[in-house]
Image (cartoon, rainbow, N blue to C red):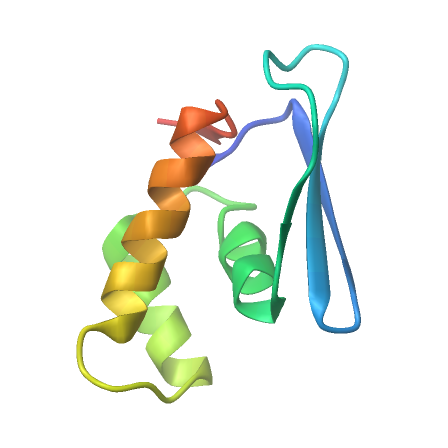
Length: 86
């Protein structure tokens, strides 16, 4: 899976923004914190949920299960708006 070419993202400071192009079915903007930005960055190339979780664990410290849950929820929301190519 990877980020759809119909979406662009930008991170400024602690906030990341995902914006659809004119070809995307979603109209609006998705905002998130820096961890959201890391997930979007990792989706810049073909990857898997497991690889994203592993990369997040290298960068962030969190109680067991938190990173897995957050990645799963983020990917679900990105799929809902059509931002991920499978």
